[in-house]
Image (cartoon, rainbow, N blue to C red; front, side):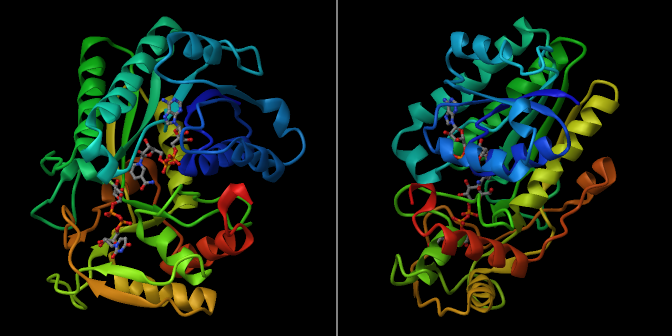
Length: 347
Ligand code: NAD
Ligand code: UFG
């Protein structure tokens, strides 16, 4: 059993990963300010994790930009043991919002991460898994994208993630003993197969899968497909979708590697290596749900790339991890969550 601190553990990826870590027998402190999540997510995580899990989870409602909140979290371990490693999910992730309010993104993503690292130093914890994003690559020229591709973000969200990556590299170079994984996620989708936890975006979803599932369930009338004239086989944009349960497994594998191996700075893509177009996703969702998803092809969205697909070989080589779940399974589980929770955790 390892004593872990999970920042942002009530969020979409954090809740699924927390469940997996509880199931693996670890003991967790979660810190979350519920800026984009609900306490109900962690209540359901405990329900899924089964008897005894409640003794291994402490939730601290707090902000990663507050040294006092972080001290409280570092002292809250249910085992009474020191925190051995941190998985850092807490952050903001909406590209459009980051363009309109960049200072908020620099504050939460960069300053929040800096506060966390200071607290880790103060508490003698030097093992960290960080949620980065393929957004740090911007609009890459070669496909699939390897970890060696240039870092050239094109929006404030991407810049804030790239800056945290750089801060982590500087820290690892400055002081021996850091074990850090920078995980660059491609497009996380899906939900736990029980349909009890899933993605609960507030307002109009920015991302494709939540939008498609809200159309299928009747909350929205029609999907807008952003561009039908991309240089792809069917003209719609291609992405590398990854099931959130596969992504959660990727975190567990990265954590195990960091704890077992000598100190290192690990940088890995977490993706499937397979691209799917928007229209393929629509068809897969229609078969998974048995519902029609009406759509209209409209103008391209600013800042979109035609195609973004990971080269996932390094993660396979270093972690023995690869994705297992297909697009059909991503749609099946998103639909199961959407149907059971048409208005998310709110009812
Ligand atoms: P999410 O919004 O569902 O989860 C983030 C969690 O962090 C939320 O529970 C939120 O309340 C919490 N949080 C935000 N600011 C906080 C603060 N100041 N203090 C404490 N808690 C705070 O997002 P997610 O999809 O689960 O993403 C998790 C991480 O992965 C983020 O850092 C995100 O940038 C990164 N990421 C996400 C995607 C994606 O498409 N979902 C892709 C690549 C990277
Ligand atoms: N799309 C539509 N209609 C929609 C929403 C999306 O056609 O209503 C298309 C997009 O144009 C794109 C594809 O569906 O071709 C996927 O779009 P998403 O918005 O779901 O995902 P992105 O690849 O644009 O970006 C997302 C996050 C980023 C993150 C990136 C990689 O928004 O923050 O995944 O993790 F960096």
